[in-house]
Each structure stands twice: as structure tokens, then as C-alpha cells.
Length: 303
Ligand code: CP
Ligand code: NVA
Image (cartoon, rainbow, N blue to C red; front, top):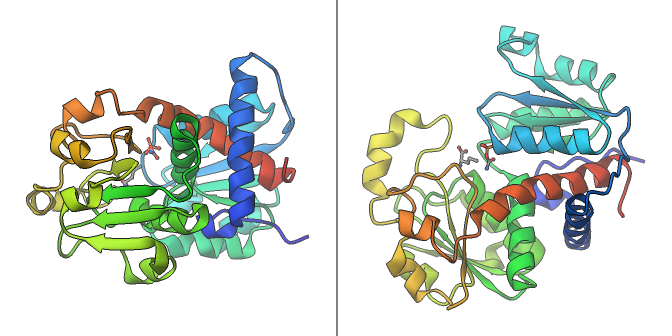
């Protein structure tokens, strides 16, 4: 059977994704009960990080430890990748030794080239284009707090970035409507929008996007690799803070999500970030459970 990769949410069918989240919720309950479940004994996950990470690194490493396996942290600073060894050669070598590879990098094309020659599953742990693992945790969190997301309205406020692109895929795969409010020049990629055009509404006004929405979410104004644009972006996004006014027009029981790290006073006010509608800490924890379900799915099969 051909090896399955998870480079974007479109790599799994809507049914597979929905089942995977049920499994994530079940694995979470097992872990909270203190049950030991070690389906990946003696298996190894290679983790290539070309960008910083707190949640992604810790959640994947802990996931492998809880499953009885092992995770290897590989940074370009200490591997031959940083000295120019081709990505395809790295993929060929690693996939003869490890059982799966997780990659956080810049250009999405790098992970596609790796996957094209890899004999083992490759997981996208964030590229400039997508962050699909985060969406597994986000949708799981919504389901746990508010039930099914299909038929609901989600508002994305801010940059049309990698997270926004994965929300666009999620709208299609999980069946919700996505209102995107982005300033001029910072809209999501038209090619990605085209992949879910029926589910996505592009707007300028954050309040209009948030009106009646069941989930409000945002992300940093300058992503990793855009540090030099910080000042000009802060200017462009000044009117795009998720604050009490934005939350005030959303559905009464709307939840606030943020993939983190968050910048209080920039993309989100402290009042919203630390307020009663914010479920960001559950969302962060769910990275662990959702990725355990993903690792199990890719290495063993559907449960
Ligand atoms: N949300 C997220 O991916 O966090 P890290 O950058 O800390 O991994
Ligand atoms: N858009 C952010 C997400 C961080 C988890 C970035 O790429 O830096």
C-alpha cells in the first residue's frame, strides 16, 4: 500500500479526518485516566525543525514517548541539512531509519520534495503555506466545547497566512463557513481560496466577519521569517485586533482560539485572550492528543 503523508488537510478524506478527531478525544480520555497505551514501541519519529517551536516540538516528542516510541530532534544547525545536503538525499537516508518524519520549514515545496522520495509518512508541522496539525487541535477543541462544527460559521481575523490557509482547507473538509477579514495586500493565496471557494467569504471589516460567528480566531501579524516586516505589518493590521467589540458581535456562545504564541495588545486584546470565551489552553493541549491520533493513523491505520 502507498505510504500516506499529511502535508495538508486535503491528504485525508473528510470521513478520515472526522474519525481521527473522535480518536483524539478517546486518546485524551485514556491519557487523563492514566491508562498506558504503547502502540508505537520501538518506533521512531524524526523531527526536522528549521523554525522555532514550543508546542509542536513538545507535543510530538511527548506523543511518541507516551506511545512507547522515540522522537529525534533534528535541527539544520547540527545536521548536514544546514550544510547544503539536498533535501531528497536527507529524505532517502532518514526514511531508511525512522518510521515517520515531521518537518517544520519555510517553502512548502521543501516538504513536498521530501515526501516525494520518502518511504515513510511525512507530516507537515508548519510551512509558509500550511499548518494542518494545528487545525486538528482547533477543530477538536471546538467539538469538545460546542459540538459539531459542520454548518457553523468561523471568523478568521488578520493575516491570510499559513494558519488561514489551513482554516480554508478545514472549512471544506469539516463543512463550515469561513469569513476572512484581512487588510489589503494580506489576503490569503487565491489558489488556496479556490480549493474551497464555496465555503469562504473574503471581507475587509473584522466586525462584519465576526458577526454571528461561532468561533473567532486570529494569529500573529508577522509570522516566522517575516520579522523584518514587523513595523509595517503592525501599521497594516492596526484595525484587526480581536477585542471585546469583535467578540461582542459574534454568537453569544462563541469561542476564541489562537494557535499561539499570542501577542496581547496586537492581534488580540488581553481581555479576550484571558477572558471567559477563550479556550486557547485546551487548544494547545489538544495538539498532543490530535497528533497522537494522527501518528496512530499514519503508522498503524484507522482506529
Ligand atoms: N502553534 C504552534 O505551532 O506553536 P509552536 O510554534 O510553539 O510549535
Ligand atoms: N503564522 C505563524 C504560526 C505560528 C504557529 C507562523 O508561521 O509563525
